[in-house]
Amino acid sequence: MNLEKIDINPSNIPRHIALIMDGNGRWAKQRGEHRLFGHTKGVDAVREVLKAAKSFGVEYLTLYAFSTENWNRPQQEVDGLMSLLVDSITNELPELQKQGVKLQVIGDFKGLPETCQVSLSEGMESTKHNTEINLVLALNYSAKWEITQCVREISLKVAKNEMIIDDITPELISLHLTTKDIPDPELLIRTSGEHRISNFLLWQLAYAEFYFTETHWPDFGKEELRAAIISYQSRERRFGMVSE
Ligand code: IPE
Ligand code: IPE
Ligand code: MG
Image (tube, rainbow, N blue to C red; front, top):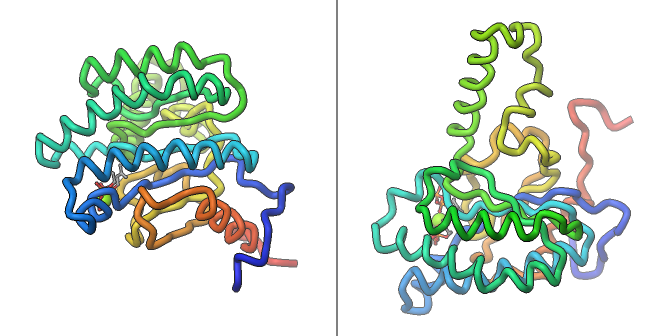
């Protein structure tokens, strides 16, 4: 299908797009640069994609920025990523305000370095009344961590007789995940050619459409996002039913 000839249908925009931003390291390596250079360029792509998502009418953009497993990277890279996070929040805050972006974080917040917690809290607090688009950063996030937390929380309520086992429904489980205020994503995008989910939003992606591209994250922009949405719009979401 030639996607260039088709335009976006404004009446069928995914409300929520989840994105696995992959390939910063490979992008940098191809240019003979250090991996952190790739991550820095990745922030430019975030800025552009956020603006594009807003212009298409997307309501929630969830970005996988740092997984629980990413702590196992070389210390220098981990430190670099954490300071890039703090710098980016500080530098981008005026633009986030101007664009009406509400910042949210999912993941094990308390496990992030203190400096990150402080700047993220400031960012969330100062953007909490914005309504143009929700930017959800998945930081120190993994779906298995999230589901484990959820099981513990519900079990505790049952143990304290605050609920009974029959109260446990899919809806109740959703309300005990870090995404409790956020609708499930209709579309998942992963850049850089890997076809895996890497412990991201396992529960919430149950019926999402998946879109994979070879493009490394720093090269991903508005036109790629448009192509992903057009591809999404060409699909028939059957939810277990039949076409007719
Ligand atoms: C994604 O790019 C960014 C993070 C995981 C933080 P990578 O750093 O995974 O880049 P590759 O996959 O090594 O190319
Ligand atoms: C997934 O990318 C995590 C983020 C984008 C933050 P990784 O590059 O860490 O995933 P794997 O290791 O290739 O599965
Ligand atoms: Mg990677």
